[in-house]
Length: 549
Image 1 (tube, one colour):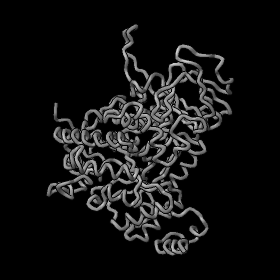
Image 2 (cartoon, one colour; image 1 turned 90 degrees about the vertical axis):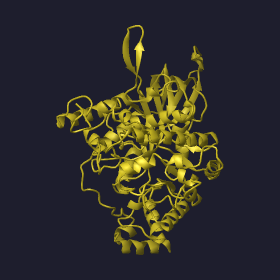
Image 3 (cartoon, rainbow, N blue to C red; image 1 turned 135 degrees about the vertical axis):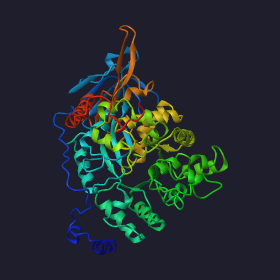
Image 4 (tube, helix red, strand yellow; image 1 turned 180 degrees about the horizontal axis):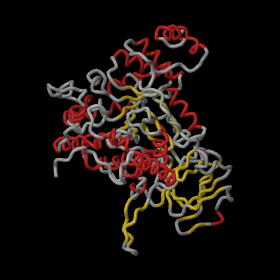
């Protein structure tokens, strides 16, 4: 009966009946037009997979929260971890304990090995998007920062476009992390969804066309939202949501999680669930949600309107979310510029790793999403600092009480650069109160659990996917070693300041990628576009006119 109803709905909505009944790909919404954005084949990039790779003299962190262990030798067979063999104690290696020689070996003395990172909030932008960046650029920035699995939470492109890339990544024909697809609910069909029946049909269409889950955002009517959540749960599709201001009056996190929502992005909808003296955020009377500076300014004052930490309402909301096993993907880094514009807009990596076309998107604009720096003030930043203090308090306590918190970057907006933003998010969880081991757990096993893939990803364990991050030095002592730009250190023997660190290798599906070579390719892409635009080397300007001189 459902199949017959879906066929009728496809006809009513103008979706080709012949393609649908034949099981062929259904036409999806048009983008801005045909854009040539080829992703080059993997070619000679990466070593492996081999029947037997041995990583020698490893110190590893397994992702479960356990402390670092080693020395061990890790054996990889094909795309799986085959064995983790203890070989003695630090400074006392037992050569007789080593596993036999491999087809390919690496001596990783002095390196730490972590599970491959899971980014629970990404957008694979392309030349068709406002950022106008090649998808290859984004994929290489992610992989070179250790991200081996990513959850894409919405694209302007059709589901089929991303599904094709997902398949190529799964076959390792191109370079990048594996991807789970969560399309925007409002973009599944090429028409607005205004009734529960069509909402359920949209969810079925998304799954049929290759979606792994659904991302909700925007002004979705209440009955439509809850019908869609119910249908997704019936079909086994995971769900997450950006609780936009248009919806929180009837759909905060308590209400949506009660209807089966699995996780939330950012923090909207959470403080609103903890109001005690109001139902609606205290908007100024001249507030216009479409004015992004006004919207983000008022968002920075929202947590101060919620119940205080440790109060009865605070605990009631947290208890209910914990009972429902609700997942938080905070994306602290997505809003970091709001509390410190100078820090983010002048980050060290922009010079060599940010494409001029992306820089254009970042610059103050009434049109580009997240470019709301029309007249950003110290007072606005002070409000956001307090916003972060309260927000981080909730997230840290949620983790302390057993809640699942993941690492999501939401890069490509607000001076937040792909790959680099992920490591920043790890540092921000550390600031929130997570220990270094808890941060690694959030970035690995917790992320895999949020995606429902913890039985194959997220930990270093025999039988799991051979997804690894290899870095020289101890990232638990200094996470800055994970940034593509590394960190600076004074060499006392030479008196010279040196730049050290940066992830050395990322292993995905048993293929060992030299992360430094991938970052070099990205730098070449940026340098090429700067040369094409006659932009000199060095930092790019934000302002067109300077009257301060």
